[in-house]
Length: 364
Image (cartoon, rainbow, N blue to C red; front, side):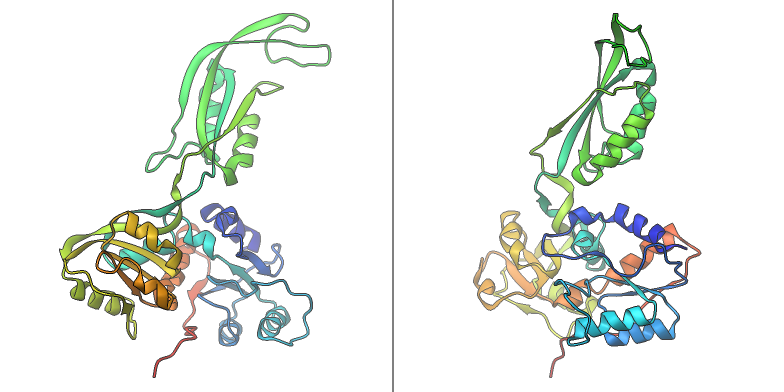
């Protein structure tokens, strides 16, 4: 299988446009035209992970954390990143990263973490700022179904748990074909009125170009009339963190013991425990302290993430318990998530989860 096929699938599942500005997801090392024999999935790219890929004859490593975060100006093996890039190139191993783009989708890193912790009815904790457009086009009534379906197939029309969403209005369009035109209907030089359907639908920014292209390809007119409007709506399907509820409320110490067990964590740090049973839980895999106030505004009983700073633990004392369960610990299931994506899409493709531990933090 060509690497480009895998990339195209990943970038439809977790578009690169959803990554944060500081991130560097995507193809980091390699040629998209390369034939991939076998892939190894890891949370990080380390020397041991590359050795494992060599041993297992994998010529692709798919990692959550990008190997390259900062621009490389040279490859002289003077630091760890340079040495790992050189080693991957020498062994014909491509490296692809799915980081905050995978964090920021509704069925991504936080969804699998919520599943492991028994959190149900999950929603995005902090929905993305407006990354939506309204696309409106006008087409002959008898072609409206084909044009509408082409737009849906390209990714338009998703609102929450619904798809194929549109608003349709019948009306009459007018135009006059000039000398160089090749009109689908009407005659050159004469004003023509055509019964048309106005189709309105929602499109995420990152899918706009492909939706417009599909719309134009399906449309019978030589010149397609369409409008694009920016929206202030929040996206319910993309954003940071998750919030949901336990099936039954639990004593807080019992729930923290469950978290520790499910994440196989050496310990979990927390601020003052609230004095009631817990049911509403907010989470963010990795470094999520920026979501503390969002979790509090939505009345979460507990917020679980990693990399909490000392002063952050003072926030919302007695109102919401803040838990640092570890960066690695809250993201470890990402390997399983990526594996499930690949096996569902490409069931005959050789892919395996890395057995190399990459947690850089140890405890005495």
